[in-house]
Length: 135
Image (cartoon, rainbow, N blue to C red; front, side, top):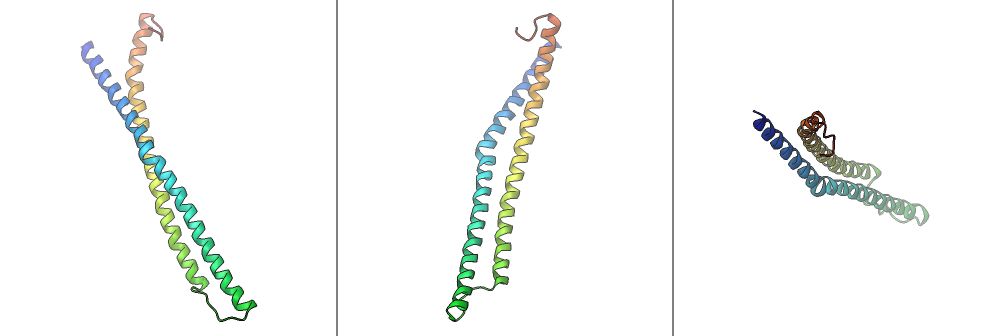
């Protein structure tokens, strides 16, 4: 009976350690790149908005100062609509980042929990035998 318990405990520990390894790989290959992608998307949206503003501002300046015909390619309403679509794309990337981070957290917590369960009994047995934590 004790051999079966030890074998199960060992299997639980191995599964827990495997999940910790998977969570580390998940973070390296999915979560961290998603964070970088989200930051890049935010920077892209800000640059796009600034470019639109400068184009719009330049067209207004030409119209007012030089009395030139309006050369604006878009009205302010069209710019606002364009910005909303950029924000939606950025929101999608943020959502991906959140989901990937949550998956990593769940895998990490389950793996850690399994290792703790398996090691708890080993430490309990050592304490009962008087070996302490070093043995």
